[in-house]
Image 1: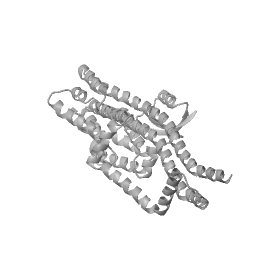
Image 2: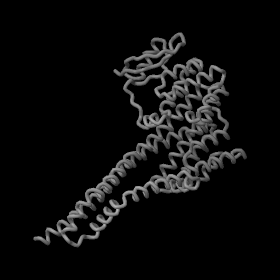
Image 3: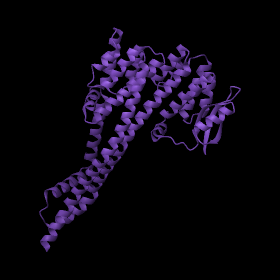
Image 4: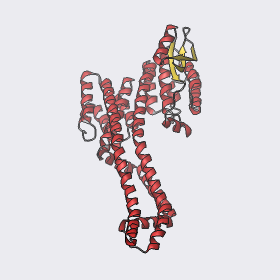
Length: 405
């Protein structure tokens, strides 16, 4: 049995919360339904926050996971018949993040003054994305706010999971490379100089690789501030270039053409385009506006160019699939083909969602494969580095011992 904090709506339509033990969330849902209540949200008492969300909260931001839960639960409560203001009041008590509590409380106050949820959320662009605001507004205008929130929650959840998978795949090699660099520097600064003194006292001719190691150690030790300054300057230069318009363009160009990484970039951006566009169209957002909003959430500039071209050409009567099929060097063929099927059958949002799911699963598998491939590569790199240090240090010692004998 597992203990859950839950919120539900009773027979009288009033929201309440509590703690109960149950086998799982589905069993809890059935138990409450038998009692005449509707489960709104349930979270394991022992459920842990993902480390990415913990870091976000540490710096005063609102974790994406909390915004996803908020969006989904707000949709459930409105669908169950609770007024928006009352729903926000319940969710404000549930929120764990202090910053988010204040934002939800402010939303509730604006709603009670007569503002719409979309207009109130638009006052907090650092918390609520352009996609969220547009989809909520479309739901309000169509009278399907609960449905729009449900779609928005799924869109946010899919995007967040994709981001976590990619970041997770990069963490392991990044840590190993950083540790290798740190150990290498410590060896050069503290270990090699003590051995160098011994070698110099022997007056032996040292191998080239030993002289290279000693030279690097001597330079690093005597110019440590210069080296640190150079590292900081290079890092700042790379960051500045990455933030500039031309720099971003270069990075986007290179990332699309790198082996292995290029396919991952294409599929990641394809998944984002498909999921976001599907969610917006399903919520009733006009196509031209949906294209603009989707451009805001796509990371690669070449994908944004294609979306901008699609927006212009669709206004002239062309299909969006024809535009994507002309750029198969950037966007996989499958995206355009699925769009074409969606347009022909009148099920474009559904086809886009299937495309997003396909590429999200593909990215998930590729990131797992990358982790499997990277591990032996890193082990080989570590072996080469250790072997070089060992050879550079042990070889002269053996030479001296041979001369003595």
